[in-house]
Image (cartoon, rainbow, N blue to C red; front, top):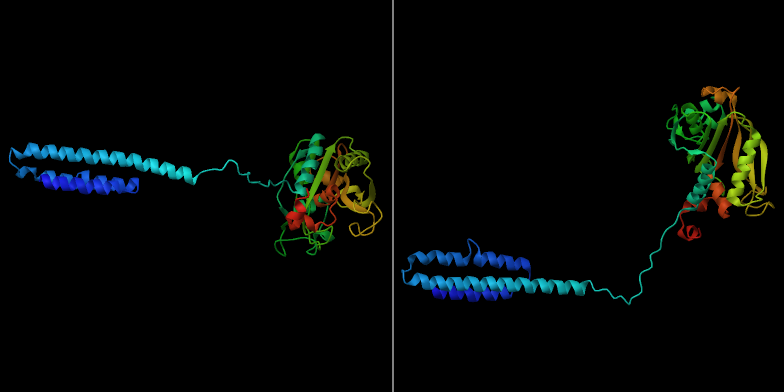
Length: 341
């Protein structure tokens, strides 16, 4: 039996010293010292030894177990140190190498222009509202004094969900004006930016999907003069002092009187070019005094309160703000174009 133990020790030490990983070392420990291991199997045979042989074999068995355990402990430390050295080599960092340049993105020119507009109006005491892009025709048209039969309600201008549907992609953010007047306490000062949809042909200044910013003020003593003063102040804040604007009479069903405001073309300085279609001016927004019918429909007495409203195209504001000559560039996401801003 002593010979078996010595042979087991020799075999175990050779296997343990050749272990390549902690997992393999653990498997060898179980193989030789486990409850069902080879050393245990040999010791179970000690019952057949004489009383004189048992102490001698017991001493040898203890020595064998001790040497195997010491070898396991030593190899565990060796493997741990080896793993650490390999990790250090693998994760070595050359601190003398130049660092990698990470290119940081920035806000889209549209978002820059929108943030500037919001900041201006918030400074004037306006509240920012957001609303649904899928809208009811009642809010998009009827409550804005745009009755059945109006050209804006035709399929040729508006994206309806079905031929007989009253649900559509909103053509303006004006429905938020109605929702504000129906739910908010007077006086009201709100700004409603968001995406809108119309069946426009794509060109340098038009797109079937674009962004609009609607503003509404309702209070006692509101006049057209305050509308013009507010819009001129906003334009000068955006484009610089002395920016030239002009107001033209117009017609909108939900305002009376109504007007359109233009800014001088940034591309040609008013001479006339492709961007402004030779006119020297670019239409920026439509505006006017809120129609008494609209006020009355929202439960506001037009004899006591008055208001004004406007709607401006964010893309055209960004074009004027950054001197962009073609609206399509804003949506094409060409990095070479966007990196300029």
